[in-house]
Image 1: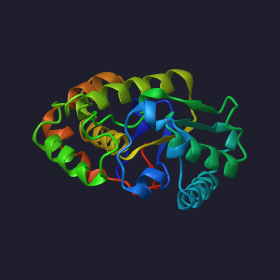
Image 2: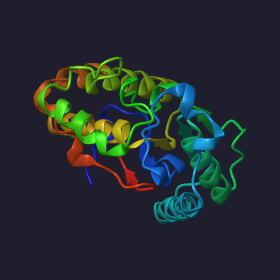
Image 3: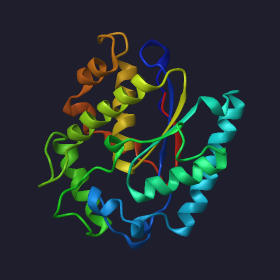
Length: 230
């Protein structure tokens, strides 16, 4: 697990959680558009609900071990039904109201849109996209988002969280590609802490290069996998 010393440039501690096993996961389908992703028919499968509950318990255990009070916890989640469902399950484990001030939908941490030619296709086609990413992470699948595009909106999302929260423990509930891309950029920031300017945006901009972004598959997460990011 890659971690970054957050004290120098971030106000909060962050954990990342990929959604639990979803109905699209069960059916082997790519569901990446916001329009389809928010549909209830694409929420968690029963196994995914169980996974989310276990992830919530693991997160609670980590908070207890670090003596972090629940009043310091914030849950930020993608608007897709599978991430919303996951966030609700975790919030219930923590006894935090999902509609309350400690929980927030952040559109910029939504699933990466792979484009119309991949939407509702077999998840076996992910490998075509990742092969393209490895060659050129700035190149978009037709009608979709490149790795660099996702970095841009993840940077915006963190700017929002950093502006709204201070000294909090933030759980970011998102999707496989955005979270592995997120961990890639924070790992690179960690390695270049002494050589780039202060400020999150400038640090990320400094490492937003093909040699870094093309490596995101190294940080792949399983469904409902919880990691401390920073």
